[in-house]
Amino acid sequence: MRTLIQNVLISGTMRSGTTLLASLIDSHPEINIVSDRMTFYWKYLFSKNKEISTLHEVKIFVQEILPSIVHLNDDNLSKYFESEKFYDDILRNKIDYYSVYLVLMAKLYYADLDGKVIGSKATHRWGVYDDYLKYFDKPKVIHIIRNPFDTYYSHKSRMNQFYTNPSVIKKYYNDIKLRTGLLFIDRKYYLAGYNSFNNFIYQNPMSIINEWSIGTNKAFNFRDDKRVLILRYEDLVTHLTGTMKNIFSHLEVNYDETFKNMKSLKNSLGNEFIANSSFKDKQIDYISRNSIGKSLQKLSNEEIAEIKDISMPFLKKLYPEMI
Image: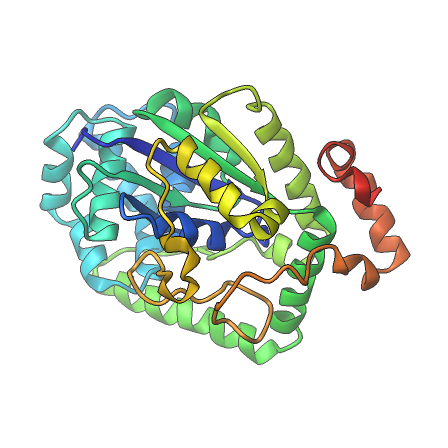
């Protein structure tokens, strides 16, 4: 399983085009990208443990990720992680971060990963860049940045749709509690305090700009590292072909134009790609440029001033035209 061409981690602030980017890259016949389904790995194992070398440490990790696995609503998958086969699969290789990652990727993607570029998309995971580049074989990072005004407005618009309907929130939490609670009671686990997302970010839209600044700062720490590619969402949208050529070159694979057929894009489970968008139309026939920079017309002067205050000095470096 260690004949992979490259590993790639795609990240950035939510509402920055990470889902679209992952699907475009995944369209390449030599690349497999798991979008979001590996977030628990980066959050619960990689960011908490500086070393993993024993089966006992792996089993502790499994206990932490089981709520996330159950949340995927895949009973067969959660049973696999509770079985001895999971540990047998890991023990075929050295017990380390990378071996666990390969087993997880193979199971989550249901694919033969030999000879492929594999990777995962996980927003807000820039905190693992240092260790990822240190511990993984042939690691690459792609960090995407969107201008903070559009990021904020997209996030705010989406959250207004969600949080102005209390019944939606209640049903969402009840579904999680029912699904995780029943499955865990059946397996004699005790589940407490599990939340599927960071409520603060979702309930306080301006906090996304704090995250934007932290993530951009982290990415810029690696701007001279050839293993890390930093790109702007606006360049992806306005210069799609040139940007994708740059991405494929970064991943050391031949250029392929499959991504140009938007209707052929798939998600990480092989189903039709549905845009992770705040707009009503989720189907993609083409990538629209219409929303770029338009948020400034819809934000208050107070919001614009606060975004500028938080996002400096990276706003000057990345979007000087917006100052």
